[in-house]
Length: 313
Image (spheres, rainbow, N blue to C red):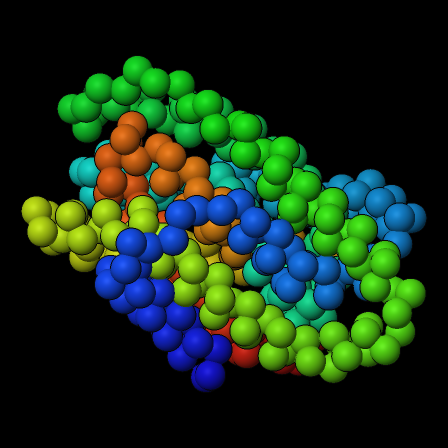
């Protein structure tokens, strides 16, 4: 499985680079890179009239809303409270309320799901980022006492919402409209889409694991190494529950429901990492642990699911 090796290599080399140097300073243009390399190639067949799919498949949209904003947060809370760590629980909860992301379109296209509906679901999920932040704030407000910590800072990271929508939705969509006029380029992208996506995933992981904020995990290991093991197990259990629930709720024989399935399986880890980086002082550096481990769990899980359950669809 070369993609799994790419994931591991990107993460390890990125972390080593960040440790040996000053590391990267986060730049939101990584979202633009993901949008152009992972989302734009999936939009060549998208038409504006496809917006009507939201109403036509409103039952699919409703299923996704229940899974992403009710069921998964409950999973995160149950697992998080069992860890007895405020930061790990906050990280899991943030993953639970952020669905989709750049990589989700790669898996939707690879499994022959409805890419037009998938793109619309991605757009809708990004619009609901403000709701996700509100849910995180409510979680922190009412759970801080359980963990014996103080929380008195409202989450005010909504300033990232507009740039993310622009970089992940608007620009990739406009770019796809322009590229459609260049037929040789469209053919080249479609022919080499597998290599483009793999190179993109490697670069994104190398960059994110090489961030200065990623090096804060070394400080955790020096003082509480057991949190690494706890967070890893928590993330694995969380994703297994996601997969089991999504497989039971969505009809994988339907291209539209497969698109919604991937929107639930794939959490928006990059955005979660951005938000957690600026929230670590509030929730604790351990908030980064489940989000970092999510990269190492979500992508291999997606590969296994795609190869085992999507080969005949």
